[in-house]
Structure formats: structure tokens, C-alpha cells
Length: 235
Length: 231
Image 1 (cartoon, each protein chain N blue to C red):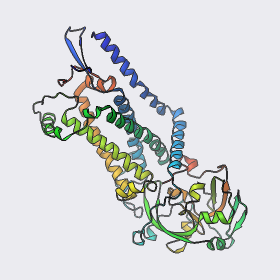
Image 2 (cartoon, rainbow over the protein chains, first blue to last red):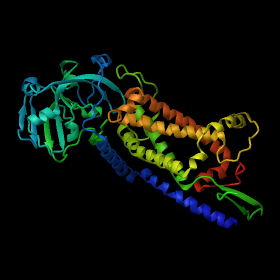
Image 3 (cartoon, one colour):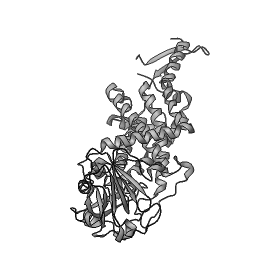
Image 4 (spheres, rainbow over the protein chains, first blue to last red):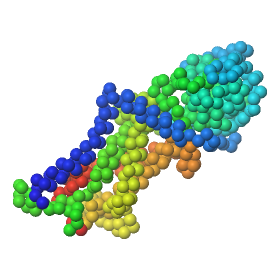
């Protein structure tokens, strides 16, 4: 073989590796954001595929619980948005047969479930808490939610908002939670009613609920999602 | 002489030069894609760690170390997660394609550390670290290299498994359970990263020490005038 031919082979082999440079698109500021958004969307899609409706999140013994005073109080605004309990209703709207205002007594009359599950914050810390409430699926039955609807969105007293896919909303461990550690929910932890979703990341566990809407189209995604965090974020 | 060894006459010196085809295309391609993905995964991972730089409780929080923002990717937690959750697919895909190719082509024999390589490790280490004589080798990778690269591949697999346990501790609850639960999976994920960075440090030092033609072989596949005698 002469040297020229060898060099030609080398150039061809080098060219075959060149497509790696395409990743350089992530270094271009105007392309970076749409590409990362696509990446996150793909990640959410894959997370949805991996979600198994009947697969429970691990539960724990009472001895493994994080002490109540060591359970972090996390919010984006105020610890206590000043809900007036006497006037509190959960306002239901959207694709349901019985829209309107539902009282805490109506929610408490539904089957109660208590579970020790892990709460994982997107920051990386985790705690094991004891949560009590009614499965959201029971409440959706009560309000006559359209079984073909795809999303449940909630609005909170502190202007926080969140949304769940219907498969997660129907998961047996997804609770309309009104108790923590067998005591009525404290104001800092989202009284009178919050979401407990042990199959999802912490910021999906919205507190101080005021409105619940069942929809076919996702019109409001979520507070942190609108800042750039993942929507599905199933664990 | 094998098909992956050629000889040509140098136009400059007129001497006969030997060249070996060391790395098939898929190995080179996945190596560079994976290198970029690893860079992004480590950088964004360290930014994610900045959000809660501890492995203890949240209350009270005792920080392990404040990683400087300048050596992190993503700027903030949400941004870093976008990078991490996007590039993990590239990281995993390159690993899967690489392993599948190595397995089915039989090329894994080049890199897999097997028991018979064991006795060659010390002479090679003595050569590198204590200026001992260079043991004669006939393969693309010497025993010490095989040990390092096999370890790196195992660490790569572990980085994915620990990562999956942190990403989906409910769907992959068995994985998280094997690592001692979500909390410890996060610790393992962190430890595996440092082990990979330790490998990378040694790898980069060796690349610098072995010069240009060694480096080029990971781009073109061909190494001219190899430091070993090809069989």
C-alpha cells in the first residue's frame, strides 16, 4: 500500500466519526432551549410509558417515619395563605356530571386510606411521612368525572397550580389528603386538603386546594413546570 | 499478517511503516458521543447536587460541600435537570450500542479483562508508575489497560443503574431496593460518578503521555507505528 492510499482511508474513517459534531447544536444559544425542551418532552413521554397504574410506591413501617417536626414545610410563597376553614369548599368544574362546591365533610365521608410513603423533593432530599385521606379516584367517582378525560388540574389558595395525568390521578395511592401523622392537616402542610401522590415528585403534591378541574386538554400545567421543570415527573 | 495490519512506504523517509486498525467505527463513534454525554451528565449532575448538597436529613441540613457554580452546567436546578434528563438518553444509547456491538462482533475480546490478564497487570503498572522495563505486548490493549477499561465499562453500567433508581424509585423499586432504598441510591450514584472521574483522570494523563498517533487512532481507527507487535 502506498502512503497516499493509506491517508485517503484515514480521512474517510475520520469523516465517519464527524456526525458527533451535531451535538454542538446544544452549544448554540438559540438552539439550546428548544432542544432541551424537546429532550424534556421525550423524557416525560418515556416516563408516561414506564408508569404502571397498578404498581404501588413502596410503603414503610411506622418506625421508619420521619418525625413530624423534621418533615420540611416547602412552598413557593407563604407557609400559610390564610384559608378560612368555615367557608372552605373544593370547587369542581370541567368534564364532570356533578360540578359545584364540595365540603370537607363530603370528602371525609368517602373511604379513608392511611399510608406511610416517601416524599422526594426535586432538590434531592427525601422524607417518609404518614398521610391520610381519600383516594382521588373515589372523589372523581363522586363528582362523576368523565372516564375519557385525560387530566386533573388543581388550583391552590396560594395561587399555586398543578396538574396530573388521569392514570396517576386514578392510582390507588393518590390521595386527597386531609391528615398527616393521624392528625388533621396543619396550615403549613396544606390544610384543609392537599394532594399526596407517592408516584410523583414533591412539587406535584399541591397544598391548600381550592379548585379541581377535570379536562380533556391541559390548559394549565403547573407552577414549577412553567419555570422549566418536567411535567410528568413520575417516580 | 492479519487484515487489520497494513504496511506502507513513508514518502518522507522511504521507510516501511506499519499501521494497525484498532477501533471499529461504532467503537469510535460511541466513544466520542459518550464522552460528550458524560461531560454534560457530570456537569449538570453537580448543578443538581448544588440544590441539596447533602446526603443527610433536610432538617437540619448539613452540607457536604458547596460545589462551585463555575464547574457546573445548567445554571439552576431546573436547567440542570433539562440537561441531565436529555443527555442521559444519549449516554444510555451509546452504552447500549457499544455493548451490543462488542458482544455480537466478538470485538469485546480486545478490551475485556479476563483472569489470564491478571499476571500482566503488575509488570505494566511497574512500567508506568515506577519506570520499570516495558513488558512486550502483542495486543491493542495491555493487561492494565484492559483492567482500566473493563472497570470503566462496569462503572458506566452502574452509573445508569444507580441513576435509574434515583430517577424512577417507584417503577424501578427493585433497583432502588437493591441499593438500599432511594436515599442510598443517590449516594451510590454520587460515588460512581467520582469513580468514573478518577478513571477519566488516569485516562487523560495516559492519552497525553502517549501522544498524537495514539490519540488519532480513536478518531480514524488506525494507529501508525504501534507501540506493540501486532500478532
